[in-house]
Image (cartoon, rainbow, N blue to C red; front, side, top):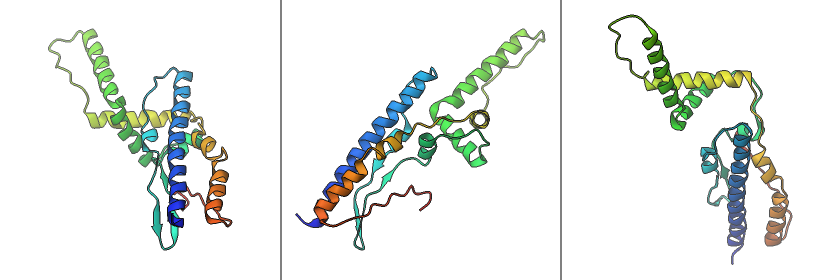
Length: 193
C-alpha cells in the first residue's frame, strides 16, 4: 500500500471511532441530565450532527475534519447565567419550532384564554384561535433566553472525556509507525481558526 493509503486508513478508523464514541458519550450525558431533572429522553440534533468528514488530500497536507453543530461547545463546557444575544434568541426560537415547544405555548395560551373567557359574564364572546406560530416561536425564544439569563447551564464534558482518553497519543503512535518519524497533531475548534 502507498503511504497516503496507510495514513488514510489510520485516520479513517480514528474518525469513525471518534464519531461513534462522541455520539455515545453525548447520549449518555443527555440521558443522565434528563433523568436528573425529570425530563424525557430524546434524540439530539447535536448527536446526529457529529461526524468525521472524509479524508482530504491537498498540497501535501492530509486533513481529517470532525464537525458538530455550532453550539457543541456550550453543551460540552456549560454556560454561566447571563444575557442571550438577539441572534441566540432567534436560534432558540427556531429550535423551539422544531422541538414542539412553540406549539405547546400556542395550545396552553389558547387554553388559558378560553378559561378566562368562560369565567367572564359578558355575552356574545368571540371565538378564540391559537396565537400565530411566529409569535409563539418568538415567545418561546424569549422564555428560554430569560431562563438562561437566570440559571447557568451545567457542562456535560461529553467531548472532553472522549478526546482526552488517550486516543490522540494512540493516533500519534500509529501514524508514527506508518510514517516512521515524529509528527504533530493540531486540533482546532473552528471558532479560533
